[in-house]
Image (tube, rainbow, N blue to C red; front, side, top):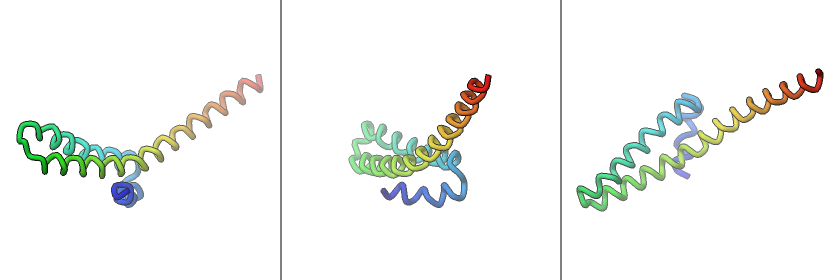
Length: 89
C-alpha cells in the first residue's frame, strides 16, 4: 500500500509510461540485493531487498492497471468501429 501511495504524484507529473519505467529501477536493485545475499551471507541485505521489492510491486500495480485500461479502451473502440463498418456493408 505504501508503494501505491508513493506512485500517485509520479503518475500525475510524469505519466503512466515513464512512471512504470521509473518503477523498474527499484525492481532491478531489489533483485540484485536479494541475489547477492547468497555470496555475502548477510540477512539484512535480503530483508532490504524484499522491502524494496514490495514497494516497487505496490507502486507498479496501480500504474500498470491504468495503463492496461487505457489501451484496452482504445482497442475496444477500434473493434467497435470495425464492426460498424462490417454491419454497414
